[in-house]
Length: 447
Image (cartoon, rainbow, N blue to C red; front, side):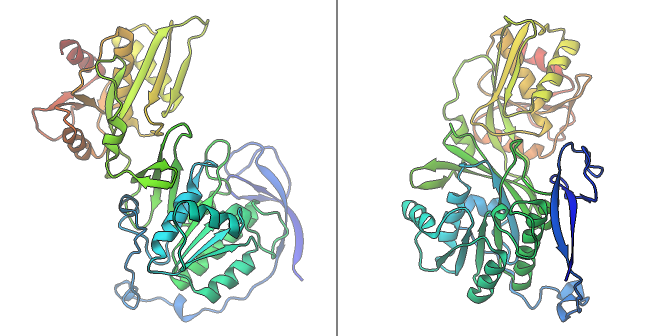
């Protein structure tokens, strides 16, 4: 018999403690320790042939590691060329954003040539079948298992030997070896570890769906993101037709890549050219609008940054953002006041990334500042101008990564003037190189 004991586990980092406290001593989060009962048993592990050292030059010689296509070209590109056998992908997103719909479409595409197992812990097999009928995903090779017991799931995987697995979602699955409830830190850690182990041992690629917290981060301990090979965030606003799958971590390709989809009655449709999709409804000749070549990977997308500056009627002026961090807007506003002498303390400022894309990279600083000034002065930014660059606290414009990719994408859509940091190495007449924010304003004043 194993010894049962009560521990307090942090829901953020997964650290465990013998007693409860208000703050986790490991990650510093407040009120995240939850009580759990666990049973530990001593296990003797005998080294197998698979665990013996071997030369790296021969490590993959006996296996066929050709990638499996998802049937969606932009998604294959975002993942680095497709899905690698044995790869474990964690997909997270807000409820109702379309995760299950997208994964069922992927399963249907792969089922044309491989056996696929779709494990649903949130829906019955009948409900999955109804959704599959709506989006045209009914295939003979697509097997559905409505189960939340980990031991039953592992047994089904060993018996069916599928070529591809989807687990929706990891928070609903529990193991009989643990007494804690499904979705607890210990259950999520154990379930994800067992699924990853069987995926690696049998070379079966697996997509795991992870729920998110109210703050938008992936629910469960941080170890969940460390275990898997790839982490993808499915984003989008319910009021918009588009959805974005952003690859945050990828051991088999570049991180920061994204794939854009459009939500339709028959499911999600890939958007092959997202830049034209986001620029289709851009207003002409309106103040407070500028184009920003956005990228967190090698594939840039042109998005519109809008700002609205108006006289405040409150004692404290409002600062609202959608698509960027509100703290970043506060910093940009302070830089504008200090370095350009523009008075904004009596103005409400609203900034929006059109389409609802969430941008965290610092290259958006310069476009936001220019959009705010354009709205304040009610002077439109010329339609052929795009901009990118990070702002320092002294007003200098700093270089950012993937400069060449951004410039190429902007030129592709007819932007003949691109405001870039002065440190940009490329030489071209279309580039407006600036050292600081004041130079950018002087250029716009002269256009």
